[in-house]
Length: 55
Image 1 (cartoon, helix red, strand yellow):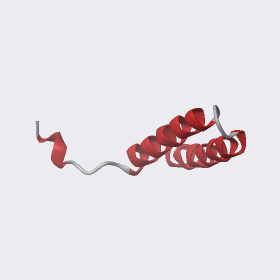
Image 2 (spheres, rainbow, N blue to C red; image 1 turned 90 degrees about the vertical axis):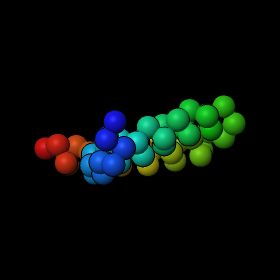
Image 3 (cartoon, rainbow, N blue to C red; image 1 turned 135 degrees about the horizontal axis):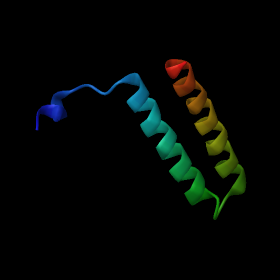
Image 4 (cartoon, rainbow, N blue to C red; image 1 turned 90 degrees about the horizontal axis):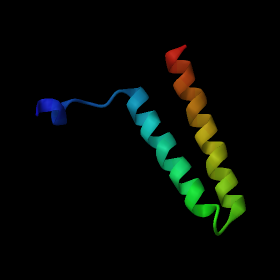
């Protein structure tokens, strides 16, 4: 109940960003392959940041 007041961690913020980029990529893959590939690249960069936090 009081979880709504907790700040999100850096890891959680990056995971949400990664998920959103991958969703955008999937949606764009049906209409614009270049933009889809760009989103996947951005998502991979975000994943590298997540791995840095964990490692």
